[in-house]
Length: 617
Image 1 (cartoon, rainbow, N blue to C red):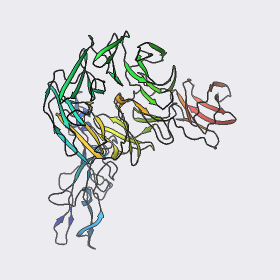
Image 2: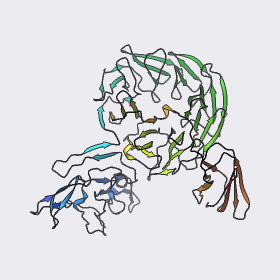
Image 3: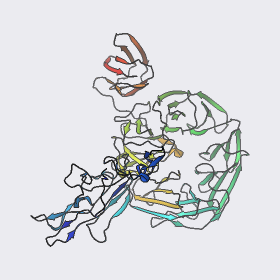
Image 4: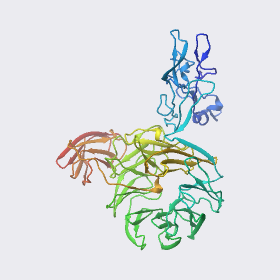
């Protein structure tokens, strides 16, 4: 069989005297999954990898190793090409060549050839699943014995990797009596403080001995009134540790809970709330000031001056001062695997978005709830995030399976969503981020082993604003230094290195900093009413799974009635929906329809729309 590869040098340009000129950066694409994890069964039934069987490159359209041809023309190994062995244009280099009338090389022109190789260049730097590379090459020089280029990651200007003590984990950046904006590194032996100076990060003070390590859950910051500087909350086996650096020394207070903390603590003003399998604790000024007998709390949140306790299917609200119950809500689904997120607006009731363990999403306002999203995908989501633009506020966003979702507060999807980028799935349960950039708002959704892919509200992917993360340790943080006007992205890896990258940004671009900062402050904003007629459509059409979704646009502030008839004219579904003030709505209908053709009518005040759709089971 043909091998679709070659074992000799690619052609170069030639001068009139026959000297070879050319070459450049040769980019290889290596699919380790196909090489080592795919293969065949041999005659005795044993599985053999493609590497062991020497079948790495037997399929031209699915090669384990290939050259990424810089001219984006697939010549090498292509039986339909005149250039089976490639051309001088397969290399990446700065400028187009100037050839004389006989085709001999004369000089390099001022016109660019391939000085950049990234996820949006042609050819694009992506993997076999279409995932854009978060690293890229810039400033590629012309061919020479020594060539120059710059390795970049996303939109950052600077970056460095530092060797750090084994097992170190980063905590949130804090201010201390030594200096501001210091990065604590927590190790089993103690704590280091790293300066985040724009001229380079370094260990400022050496090791502060403190046994216990980084604890069971992510480290968070708090502001207890007995400390003049922010503290770190570390969750240990049977206690909460409060750590601060003030008076030029390490100050540590341990709060004994008797039992292992079951979830990460919650800080609110000068309170800290913690939970074990038996109770919820309020901590203030370094000591326990109240205990609420409430077993198996799975999440704690604060909104509208109320402590929300999530356990099982129950949501309890508690007065944080008196620790007395205020209200109770029973949701249809079990809770605890995903973080609730909060949208706060000045002078109005907060909106709490609660995902259950099946990926369904509920909107809580006061003592009532509405299910705004039903998950029937067979996948589970990332954590949720919130952002807003001029026409929509709030915007709830997340990744689910191989699709990105962005929706209004009632579950109505923004135009173009759900959006599918490539043949990959977003990482279940991982936090998400959102940035305001020069090219619009970007949500960053997690891809295992790659990082966070930036998705705009267009929607389209934008690898330039993505966040590289070649590790799944879950120790990544994004931080804005207002004094230095620098945005930092940093994480640790399995090789005991601290990676940090920075870019100059004159205003804080962070819209969503991850679920541990799980609230967004803004005003409710919906698209303005339109004078266009009511429109409705069912998607996807034909419908192949319940629920079906009905998209309504140009609604007026009147109730909605949806009727669905089968092909014989029999009414099979009817439902009334109250007006919620939105000019656009997504309505999910969970009714089980038999295969066939159906007619749907929508009545909205004096407006009426009719459409036809099919169901295939």
